[in-house]
Figure 1 (cartoon, rainbow, N blue to C red):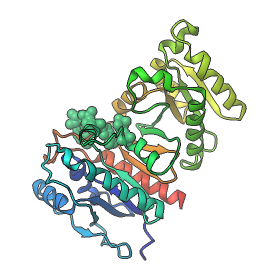
Figure 2 (cartoon, protein in one colour):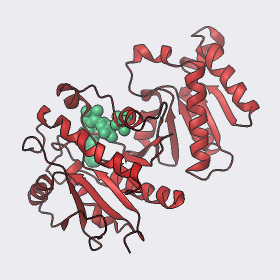
Figure 3 (cartoon, protein in one colour):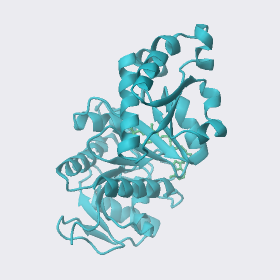
Length: 327
Ligand SMILES: NC(=O)c1ccc[n+]([C@@H]2O[C@H](COP(=O)([O-])OP(=O)(O)OC[C@H]3O[C@@H](n4cnc5c(N)ncnc54)[C@H](O)[C@@H]3O)[C@@H](O)[C@H]2O)c1
Ligand SMILES: N[C@H](C(=O)O)[C@H](O)COP(=O)(O)O
């Protein structure tokens, strides 16, 4: 019965980072899914030996599930041997090749969802490949004009109006059109993927004190408020633009299904402070399901056995739930 359990594609990420360490722990979760790890199989075997783990590794065969408790491996060969903690730009293309296998498999329907362990954005760029993150890469590879990054954890969902941009470029990137698209995607996926019938979304301002009536910036008046009014008229429950320094107070969050922050470090430090180690990153607006960890490659911990698999576990659990819901 090959289709009785959803098949999750899990990319092991940067080979020198903690991704390989964490995926080797996945059988502990006992998830009702087939876990197909996309990575170099020799890397996984040698990292398992380094960590003293005895995770059963089977070559992935689409029509034949491995026994529960084992990982199935879709082998993508490294370009150069990888040592824990030591980045090597020679493997930049390998990392993207693992993502391509997962994306293509999801688009074909062979995988129900993909879950990503962390990649190192810097070393991929050092390899001569322009790369700002999975989020943007997935949008491009699936031909999706606009996606939304959302992190979830500690009872919060925080979506971002802009993602991996220099701070200097943020204000210019927030236009009425882009904001309307972001809120529309966020709203649609809260309803469609998360099953929240009438989501209530808190929207942050961009400037301190949400612009202080135009005295500390005009983006709230010129861009954010007009879009919120327009979308409220379509029936969305949108509160804001609110000053970002107080919008994360527990009493405000209690009444909300999600927060929309205007930029990466307005929203994510709050969420990661509250949930680091168990937070999840979800890409909204894609034609496929993608969840991820909330942390990076932690090169300092790779191969040490001290990396916490909690976030990867949560990401796989959510991918499994969303896949079942979608199915
Ligand atoms: N999903 C992703 O692919 C993703 C997410 C965030 C950062 N990154 C990338 O990771 C690289 C390193 O980023 P960084 O140093 O800012 O963040 P990081 O998350 O790798 O490390 C920050 C701190 O948290 C610790 N840490 C991280 N994950 C942990 C875990 N699972 N268990 C225990 N401790 C953990 C690290 O040891 C370090 O002290 C960058 O290239 C960044 O772009 C990738
Ligand atoms: N912004 C994310 C975070 O800080 O957790 C992270 O960089 C991952 O982004 P991608 O999923 O786009 O790689």
